[in-house]
Length: 140
Image (cartoon, rainbow, N blue to C red; front, side, top):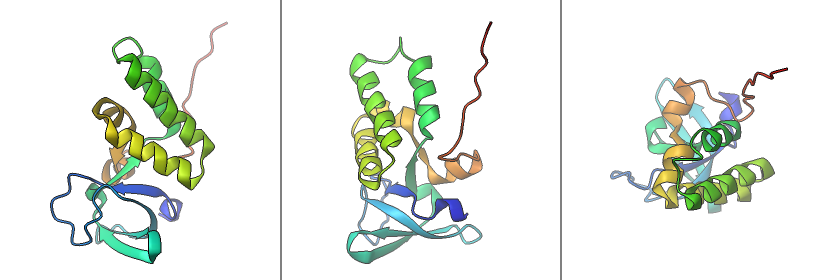
């Protein structure tokens, strides 16, 4: 789980039981113990909270976000397409501030979030990675 260290995640804003009161806040994964379902998240000012994987949200890999835009271009509202493209662009930048901004955009718009966010639990169970390359077939 070393690949998760320093990954940006957001505490689910709808989390009802959060002693740290960090719902909707973005932090970096500091440590992971999947056997105990404990993810240590470091927030600004070195505040550390411990969360289960289903309490944290992550961006889907950027290739998946782009594939979703392409697949749903006709059914999505133009505003949602523009915001999803911004999420993708921010992911391409790859800097912490850009990823944090992308997480905030994704959570602010329901259709954008449903097409670009995934719980950390699902991220892990689906074997996702931020370095995933989608295979495409090329015709002649």
